[in-house]
Length: 183
Image 1: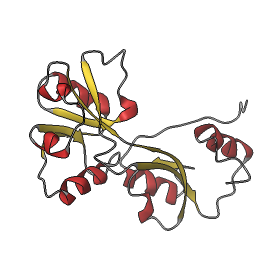
Image 2: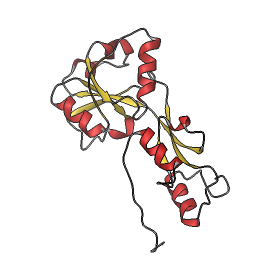
Image 3: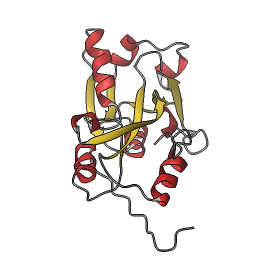
């Protein structure tokens, strides 16, 4: 639709992404953590999500009907690096319950986390949407939305940025409730 426009996506920590949007290196920052640290960015909420605990099919937790945080705390945990993908909500939940999670491995990617769960390193805590019943048929995803506060993914742009038509359209494709008038 816009032949003169190319899309370049950069992966980075939320702080790196926010800095790129704040200094004009990138038009938008899409993240869940740390964007609120940048007052020169306008944040627009896109969607909320929560977590799942992933375990091999024969794991003892796979037999539990309603997971408790105490159940999760009994096992080594493989999850996101702090500052990525709502990790602070996970830490807050354990702190509030006065439990110490045994985080043995962290990564910024859910597929890496699931790989280490498959290798037996621990149980995984990932975003719910990272579990695919077909691709991950050797794992069980246990709903953990009652254990952790939901996280909100936002898209941010620098205050005062002149948004072109294709930019508005990109935002609306990413989050349909963010139409031109709302933005």
